[in-house]
Structures are given as structure tokens and as C-alpha cells.
Image: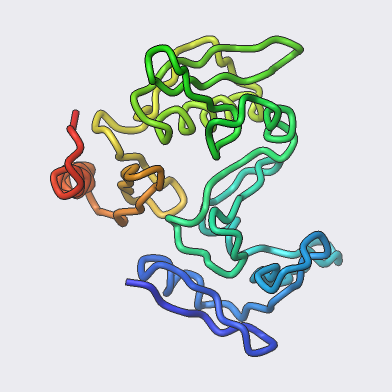
Length: 220
């Protein structure tokens, strides 16, 4: 269920029901980006003081608990649409380095191998092109690329195989440390669908399984 949070200037931010109570404990303002000229170039933020200095806290970064140095993209371009399904972590620096990959995918670092019809993920790092693997669908390849970005930005090794389930034994399930709950999501038709937060890993796995059956995907 989608809810709205009122901002200044008569604007509203869209958020998931699971995030509403947590976010609504603060007053949020609206800010216009100086880098975009369209009508959807607004973001929700609030100000805090740290050692006498004012710091802006953006709603979309709070929702994903984004680490320093990792950006957050609004997939549909609307900065006030802060539903989890519309947010993804992205390194601005690394994305810029990988935008010149073959443009057969809407995701950076991903292209289609026309020989076997599989999606390839790769990334440039330290002047080397690193192959991350081949995948049956575009979303899985994009997830591998995003994993590599996060590894590099946090100084971790990317020579190991990508493991999207490193916090869970179930596909599509991961541990949300800041909320102390399990989350589930699934990729369908090149979009990431957020399935919600759950008290147990098994409940999150069941949510993924139900969604996979609904959308006709195999589960692991």
C-alpha cells in the first residue's frame, strides 16, 4: 500500500506503507535539484545540526540506508517517488565510467550477447574490464553490476562470484540491519518489485515464493 507524506510548498512524497510510520516522525521539506529542469526534479529532505553545522538528510537515502559515497537513483526519474521499488543504490562515479558499454540495456554495465541471447554484466575497475557473469535476464545482470559497485566503493574484493543472497539462504531475501527485519524483492519484466518487511526469514522467503508463482518465475 502506498502512502503520502506532506512536504513544504504543497508537495507530497510517495512512500511504502512499511516505511510511513518511521519517516513520518519527522517534518520534511522539499528541495529542487539545480541539475534538472523538469517538473519532477524535487526531493524530500530534512535538516539536522551536527556540531553546529547544518546537514541535509534526504528521505530516499534514509529509506535505503545508503552508505556514504553511494548514490540513490529514482528509477522513474521522479525524486518524490520514494517507494522502494523505485529506488536503487548507484555509484555516480562508477556509473559514469560504465555508461559507454554497449547500449543494448537500460542498465549501466549490462549488455546482451547476441550469440547466446544472455545478458552480460561487466565493470571497469583500475583500467581493467572485469567480467561478472552471464544471466538469463537483464535484471539479474544489473544486480550483479550493482553488487560490484558496492564492493568497490566499500574497498572489498570483486574477484569472488557475485552472491545476491549473502545475508539469506533464500533467493530474493535479505536482512535489513537498520530495521532488524527480513526484506523480500523480486525482479519482473526488468523491474524490481519490493515485497515488504517480515519478522522471520521464512516469511520473507514465502513472500518471494508466492510472487514467483504469481509472475511465473522459478524459485530456489
